[in-house]
Image 1 (cartoon, rainbow, N blue to C red):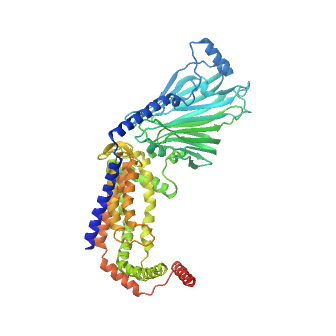
Image 2 (tube, one colour; image 1 turned 45 degrees about the horizontal axis):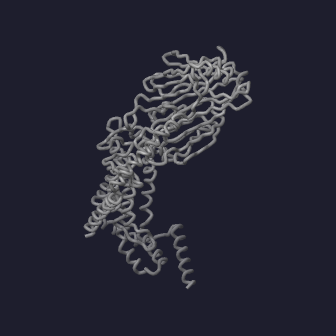
Image 3 (cartoon, rainbow, N blue to C red; image 1 turned 30 degrees about the vertical axis):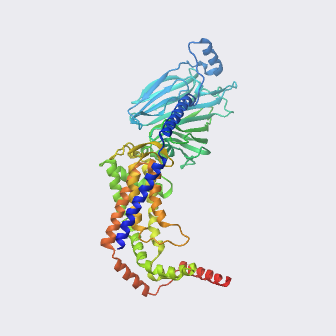
Length: 617
């Protein structure tokens, strides 16, 4: 009879969850007038975004020079003083290999376009990390004749050559043929990492070394994914400082600032892609800033964050000399681990502490291995099966604890009825019963705590695993983003404007799992939260929470809970016998039980409280 009751509750709960969902969808369904108003509102937002685009376009807005106007050219050369020796021409030099396409401008000698050849955005546009003035790189310094210059405003003369198969671009801002400030780029075949150096020659009497010389690097992170809010959540400024420490600025604050010492590299992450500056001679200090541009979900907003780093440069022997690297490429462990000597794989957000270790050394290589011979969706399912089998002893312990509590349920109900007016006595007698029977109510919590590191590690793995990016499975186009089976003409708060199926399936599986665990031994204690309400609410909360998360994560939880249900059914029907559990508990009651220190202390505290209560009466 008990089994029929559970089945009925299961069906009722299932219907209740989706009844609530359908009710909320119906309640939030807009009228035709509201839909038209929403469209008009969105058109205004899009129009405003387009109006704002020219303002957003260029971070630096350096003064342009009209080379057809001799007076303008003369005025420019007069402004920059000795550096007017450089031939001024507004031209572009291209550096490219099989992986990266770069444009370097004579104006500022800086990269003005960086495109990754092997990747596309969610809407099939090439992936750009630098485009349309979203980045700037320059050195601000003073001259001996009291001018304050910025290399972003200077023209450089390019010279392209070959060095053993590597393409070398030298950009020189000249004072004379033998006096110059040089940016040197060296691109190797089939590498994302580009050698970069800043060197001056013969400028000891031109650059005023008694005044600050600052390097300033800014970048506006471009959105490449379907959901700008979701992508923005995993876009952040990460840095290596003080001999190997790794830290990051907040990915959620409107604006976060930090000043660090001995900085070795800076990573401006744009979710699955990164722009990284590495220096072989650490920056003594760096002022780092990350400004969040995303306020709400948008289908048109282009930029997510503004990153900026300001680093003072040090003159040695009267000259500047810094050997560096640029990395423009995927935030992919396979690629970044090639540069272990400079630790670029530490820029990947594996998670903190033990969670990051599990993610880095277990799940990432495991998934990489499985996806080497199976499609990404199948690899997730296989990985889920392996994880659940590895955790099956924990599941067994959890179910054994639940079985013991189920056997004791009638006796606990009897105690609750007998001492219904005396909460302290009720707790004391319940503790005595559990102690005699060899049952610990907390033993069911321990397995859940053991699984927490696995849960959190996977929570970080799926949204940040590059191996999942744009990998399809069943109806999901991209396992690193949400799946969509229906696009809503309106937005539900905390849910979104689409319906994802994998979170629905995961919520159903979680509900059935909770019915098999919490539902069977559910006893409402006075003053405690309504557990039945929580049991129904939890899957519904997950349905809302995971609707915009990576579909691979929802797929994992769906399969994981299905497997757990099957394992628990196998334990219940073929391994554990309620009669044997009951017999074992009765045997345990007959054995003399010695209290441990914790149990004795708890009993004494309860007895003291009971005595004080009686004395108060």
